[in-house]
Length: 436
Image (spheres, rainbow, N blue to C red):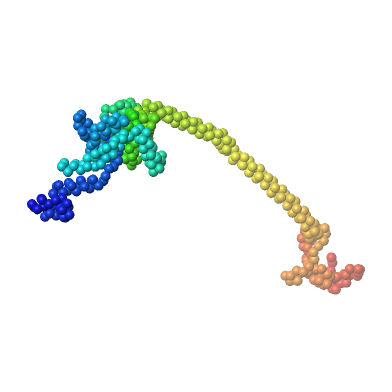
């Protein structure tokens, strides 16, 4: 161990460290100092959070903090750099410094020894804000389609603002006046300076995870461009976009809107305006409800009146006013048709009866009965049970039994003889007792 303790740093550096051969503190301190020295001079931007400038000292001590993260670094410089700065420097000022990192082996600390300090001017800040705005816009973070709707009456309102600030008073007072039952979950944070962004990010994360918070209001009562720089921070803007809960930006600075106004789901001109947009007015809602009720009643009455008129028109139509009228018309028409059909049938029957009578009269006139009535007779020769009409003298020889039918009956006779037409002699066969 004594040999190791007496070894030079250069020789020790060439030896590998091990449990049997560890490096001493001075060796690792020298190595760190050498590595940091290789970084060289750099330009660094940050915000002054502490400034220690004591009279009679030859070194000024500063703490330079990152505006978007909870990180800082110690800075040392010549006091004249602070006294002779073109713009008076104070805690909260944004600066750009040029210097070189140094590692103090005795205390094991790092410090940035600067040789030049440049305050960041308003114009440069605004230019940086515009470049960031263009970047976020190109990424689509300002797209209206990404905006989440604000609930009509949130269960609980998350409020991020300064402690005992006018913005907090305005939001709470106006909201409770408009809706007395409004509930708040308030997170007091720094709203300017180097600690504002980390605290606001922490408050947004806490309220976004709260199960009852349905909207978050980020409020501040205006201020200068330097005071509002935290609300144009890229990290904060991306946190607003990624939050699940709708966020209302109420910074209250009209001439130059911070970028949080563009990425928020709703921009309010002032904290008072934010309260009016988040919480409905109870009196106005009651008046609107009464108006809607009256309009609904009027609409219902109008609808009932229209339907009543329509029913009245339907009832006044003939088919409903006299429902049997059509049946009566059809009945009368059926009666007319039945009477006409009966008349037509009777006429047809009468005509056929007349025709039948005429035919019967004609038939009677030419029939055998009429002929017999006029003095004619039908002579039949009776042969056993058969009868034959005598049409010729040859059909009735002498002695034949005859049946003579006249108009009112029949006469039985016997043929005594025959006499052809055109002769006057009567030939008698044998009829000693023949008399007519």
